[in-house]
Image (cartoon, rainbow, N blue to C red; front, side):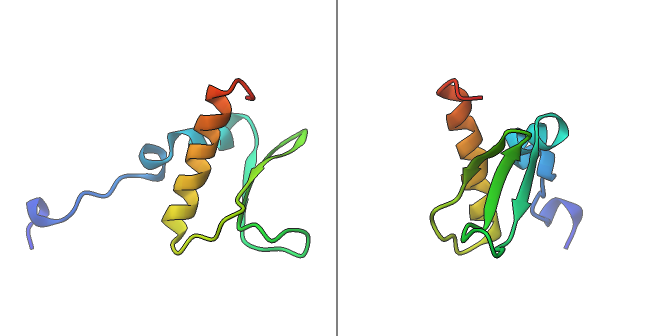
Length: 80
């Protein structure tokens, strides 16, 4: 397989620009279940929880896409 035949892979920064910006300057994300929550991803800032998933996702990529969209929606609604 030549380089031209390989599928292009994009960095996390390219695929999830809002999550990247969030982590680099506004807050953090937590991944995985814990004893305090049933969600698999949580977006937080110094004030606390900003968003957490309430659906199950079959793949990690789908979970990260949902978080990316949540940040876009919160921003569009003026909540960030």
